[in-house]
Image 1 (cartoon, rainbow, N blue to C red):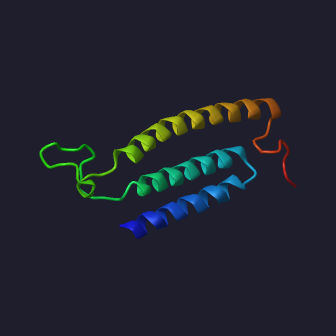
Image 2 (cartoon, rainbow, N blue to C red):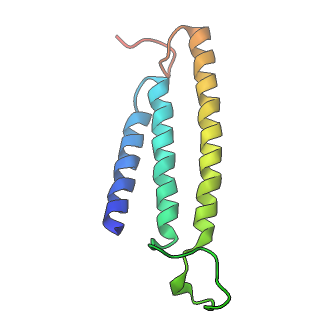
Image 3 (tube, helix red, strand yellow):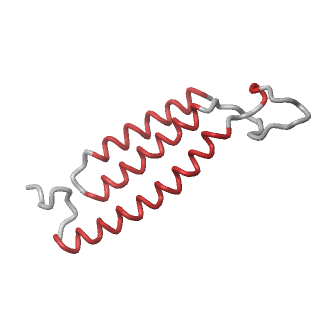
Amino acid sequence: MEIVVAIAIGLLAASGIWLLLRPRTFQVIMGLSLLSYAVNLFIFGMGRLAEAKVPVIDPTKGADPARYADPLPQALILTAIVIGFATTALFLVVLLASRGLSGTDHVDGKEQP
């Protein structure tokens, strides 16, 4: 399970960085989104990958950390998803305004030969 998550994080991060280096603004926005997904998966993985474990402590079974998932990374990821969605929407609005003003969607504002 850990190797699959590690490979997914690596692929998302590599794809995001590759798209960040592209000349068009939409590709840069998609690269930022993929990179934020990679960071979200990394934070989620830091909270111990556990299957079929509850995040809330049951008072009848005690507070043994081996029985429970860590709820803090889950809460951080939910917050990061909402903030990432809002940031992506803002970037898309800025992209459309920039394209309307300059007539091109290149990052530096001019077409490459």
